[in-house]
Structures are given as C-alpha cells and as structure tokens.
Length: 248
Length: 267
Image 1 (spheres, helix red, strand yellow):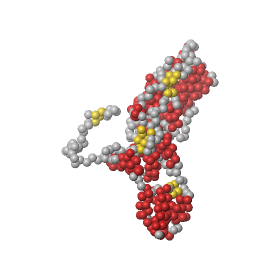
Image 2: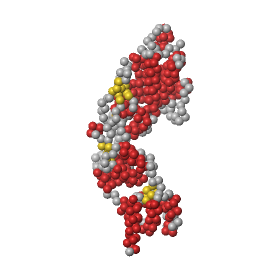
Image 3: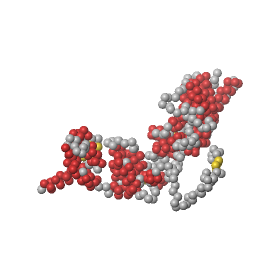
Image 4: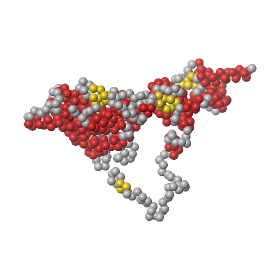
C-alpha cells in the first residue's frame, strides 16, 4: 500500500509518524539544495535506508539511484558532487539557460530573470507566517531550498498543533501547506527537475531530481486528500475515513 | 537552416562577407591559421595529460616544478606508495607531513594531482573498475515488512606509485644537488656550515639564526640575511622545518664530508 493509500486509514500515531517523515524529507531536500554535500552529510546518507516501494515511481527511481551512487562512493565523491552541484545549479554560462537555476522567478518569468513577482509573493508569504530569512542568506527568497524549508517549518508547526490537539491550528497550517504547494512548489519545480536531469552528470543529482519530483507529487496528493476530507466533514458533517485534521 | 531550443533560427552557411566579394578560406589549407582559442594553447596542452607528446616523466616533473611548496610531500608520497597503500594510510602519511607544512591541498587533492601526472595509480578489484558498479540491492525489512535498500561499502582500492615515478624518484640525488649548490655559493661555505652545525644540535628558530649569521662581515656587502641561506638549504633538503629549523640527514652528511675534507686539507 502506498503512502497515499495509507493516509486515509491511519491511526493518530500513524498520522504523527507520517508528519514526522514529511518533515524529515523536507529537511533533507532543503539541505541537499542549499549547498554542496559535505562529509557529515555524505556519512549520514550512507547510513540511511531507502524504501524500495513508496508507491511513487519517481521516488523509487530516486532512492534506487541514491543507493547505487552512495554504494560506489570513494575518496573523490565529495569533489565530484561539489563539481556537479556547481554545474547543475550555478552553471558557467552567461545566459539564462546554462544551468537548472533553482529559483522560482527564473521559471515563472518570461525572460528567466531573478527577483521577479514570484519572489515578492514568496517573501510576503514567509512574512505572513512569521518567517524571515537569516541575514546570511544573500540570494532570492524563492530559492527551492527556502521553499522546501518553509514546508518543513510549517510541517513542524502542524505536528506540534496535532500533538497538542489544537485541531483548528492544525487545519489552518494544513491549508497553508496545501496552498503553498499548489501555488508554488508543485507548480514550478517540474521545470527545474527536468533541467536538473539535463545538466547533472552524477547519478546523485539525477536521484535528487527524481526524489524531489516524486516526493512533492506524493505530498501534494496527500495534502489534497486531507484538505478534501476536511472540507467534506466541514460542509456535510459526514464522517470520512480518518481525516487527520478537521477545522471547526 | 538551424533552429535552436528556443525557436531562434539562423542560416548555417550565412557568410557576412559574401556581399563584399571576399572569398571563403579553405580550412583544409595548410597555410591557414586559426584564431579564437580561449586560453593559451600551451596551457591547454599542458592540462591535457594524456596527449601522446608528453611522457609521464615530463608531466611529473612539470607538476613538481609547478608546486615547489608541495614538492617534498609529492616526492614523499611517491616513495611511500612503492607498495600498495590504502587511502587511509596515505591520508595519515600526508597529514603527518602537513603538520609542519600547512597547506590548502588536502591529501585527496595531492593524490589526484599525482594521478593526473601519471605518478600514482588507483588499483581496484576488476569488478570495481567500472565507473559505477551495479550494486545488487541489499534489502532489509522492518517490523511492518517495508523493504529498504541498504547502502553497501564498495571494495576499497589501493594507491601505488607508477614505475615511471619510481624511476624519477630513485634518480634523485639530493646530496649531489646540495653539494653543487654549495659549490656555486663557495664564498658562503662558512655560513652554510655554521647554520647546519647550529641546527644539528637542536631545532632553532629563525630569530636564533638571524643572530647567528646576520652580523657576519661576509654578509654585509652584498647584504645577505639568514633567510637566503635557510631557503637554499631547505630547498635542497639540508634543513627542514619541524616546526623549528633542523638539519636533516642530508645536511649532516654534508657536514661530515666537509669535516673530512678539512681534515685531509690540514694533513
């Protein structure tokens, strides 16, 4: 049974486990997009277990590629990954098509420019949710790493709300996450992932593209189901199969 | 007609000089010279280690001369890897040497440079020689019978010096080089001897060496300072920084030979 199929027939503890899993995956993806892999991260990833069957073909492909790549790691793996990170996300060209630029503005503006409308909207969303970027962050706030971290932070808040049985707050945070995925992450990242496949020379960053695509799609499906369940209960008063939260 | 990914089209055979009546040049013509190469041709050739014109010996020598500050470590690595060494062993050896020779070059970088120059090779099992080994998934099941892929440890290779590098290393004669350089600096032999003797007893600081020789009348005209002699002795392996200046075995041999020759002269 896939994660999505499971989501509708879950106990409270299963829901909390799933929320924790989402947070952990968002945190991992955040880190992988933020900067090059370093020794502690590589060691951590080599100690991970990757699920064989998640119910999503992209995630499975990503985990399998990660597994193969990490099983072949040697002393120059970190250097190879640093080079590939630069090639994939920074590029060395002078036009807007020289890398898989990890900014929403690039993929949603006609001239592929940084700091466009998407960035302003993202910044407003962060502020509306009492989130600001650290002073050390010097590039656009619509970087995929920050958008993933936003999902992680809201996910953590949702987990706490759920643990403290604050259902209204949990439902509100669910809506925030769903809206953010729907309007932003799930909207533009497929273009980024396609470009990552084009520029990546290591299976590691191909795996990252697969995993990210699969995970975001799966998470969007899960949140959609939960939102739908919430709405149904809210409007009809009908009982639906184990919705994780219900806003009153 | 060519159309790129973004829909722009262009005439591939368009020649802006057509209208001016300037004939196209034949690229096959022997007299044609090409311009527009980005970067120096010589440098590009130097970076392409595998072109047939340059032997391993040349490439190793180029590497040693291009990184004088790392020369001792690079040579020591060639000697260390006469027998196959694991990456951990080479790491430890390099780090021990770098304790007194701090560097931005990591052990892995130094190995990579030596490998590119043809001085070291990385030996792996035949099966592991493929760029990416197809790893048979090792699956585990937890309580819920979810299957997981477990990352496996790949077979580790060993570093080994190439025959060319060992020939080059064995042909080095640091003692003879040192004698040659001392012969060229004949008028300062007494200064060299004093420094080597001073540092043979115990490691000495630069300040102590300044005090030892800087006021010597020999060094007043032309003006020389202790740094000049330290640099030369260090370059030719007679002095080493550890972390004060200490006379090496080669330096001691030269001292012994000096003493012998002085003895013979007196007799």
